[in-house]
Length: 452
Image (cartoon, rainbow, N blue to C red):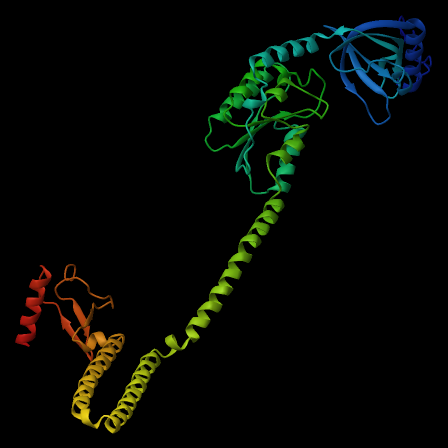
């Protein structure tokens, strides 16, 4: 590489050799020129784009309305300061101008830093935050709970940023079959705030969405500023859908965070907040199913045991045994009654021979009365038999589908009926249906029987 110093002119002969500098040599000359030519400086400006890597050093940008310069605070110096640089802070720094040789950028090596006031962006942030808070846009009472299991999720963010990739990756891992609708917008620069607000309004017009996520990845205060604009705050406030604000990193706060129903520290955290993992749902469902199944299975086992015991009872197993038992008891009672009567008659005959005729007559009357009682009891017991109703002349009539006919109304002519009697069944076909009072039906039935 050939470098020409200021004021250098091309020699007359191209054959005169020129010594080339390496990049490192040139950079070191520039560094020496800056450090020796300018020396220590005191600069005022607004802090922006603060970064704190694991080394403990602090890197930030110092800017004004038209220019900016990089600055670095080494960890040893930072630990001696009473304030920590943060975005939007107006400061005065003292240090030396130098060059970071690795990338060729010049920067201020800060030796001291003090606050002089709030930066313009930070002041605007505080003013808008205070005004919207007084209007009630931050009230906790108006914030809505998120749906337990949203089916459709709307996302307002850049289609090419890291935020959308992080959100989709987490959602796919936690609940793969969710429906996600992305409204692609610019998230920084001119017109970004208006585009974000319009996307929020547009998604709220859809009937299939359950919740919204708005946000972007990390950046400086200027990078995140679109989410500090009032137009975005108003759009979030009027949203009918619950809104999760996921802007920047955990340490970043924007106006949309305060207005939203839920604030997520990162876009990935928003995806974790909006839906529980599918495995957690399945585990809970299995637990609930077990709690429901156990008492049902226990009740079913008890019911089966009781049914088995009832089926085994002799009344249901052989119902005629119950009738026979009553008949046996009646016969036994009758025999004991006869034996007792005969014994009583013999004894009275022996002792009261003079009253024999009256006694015999009285005994006959007693026997007749007892016999009538016995027959009445026997008839009552016989009436308990399922076949007794049919023995008394009644019958049961069913239609072709086996349903019992209780009323004439509703039976169509031509219907095939099966009538069960005390002995045998009769199959008949309906010729005509007569409707009327019971007496008319009885008369009709008697006429049919007489004609038959």
